[in-house]
Image (cartoon, rainbow, N blue to C red; front, side, top):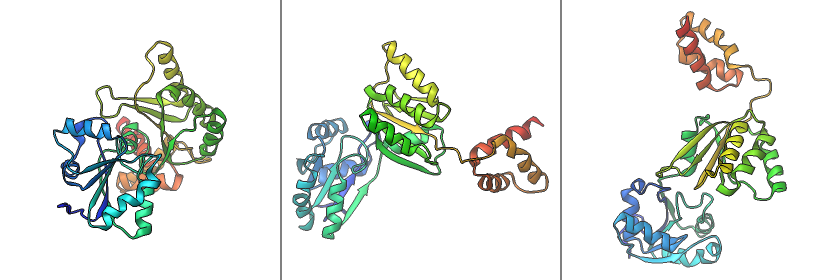
Length: 290
């Protein structure tokens, strides 16, 4: 019988996406005390445990995209008997473009408890570092591999108003950025985030046209973008949305009439459908130049 507070449940446990110091004390405890640890790659799990200076205490089983549906009930039988099953993937949060969803789905069907030990997330890390709006966003997983499928998929996203976060393999990033520039427009703001939290972490920001050209130049120079890559793309601008600069006079007039700057920015930006952060920065700059 497990000694864990999570006994009798499935625990989705996030693992570091790069820097091992991001592992939480709870993750270490779970790996040492769980009855079963279901790992996407058992060798990587033991490698992580070694870097953390711990030993996995319970039974370790492989749990990946090819067996997750078939193995779900065996794992849930452990939970049904009061044991703890911890699910880990190679990096980040299980069930987010990684194994785990089928197990959660089946646990819900069987009425068994599921909880999470949250931690590092490539999606949220890339979003936060991108410099693009974070108040509303979508995660769209991996970009389709085939050019025709990719073109249709990107075409369907061209009018998405929220910031988009996507995954891409390094050997396809040049052609994907070029396809995005064609589908979304070369002036759409974006960021390429690679090797997040690792030694060679890099975030490239610019328009899709600029980033596509840069990625192509680096590949030609033998310095291609490598490692784990997240692409973050700004949402489509609202049709007929006014320029932020054109809204600044209204904000400053309201401030002159006694309204607080943040309140004035919030109301004007919401009514016009422009990012509050951009309008606030423009208003501050205009006020400072007076």
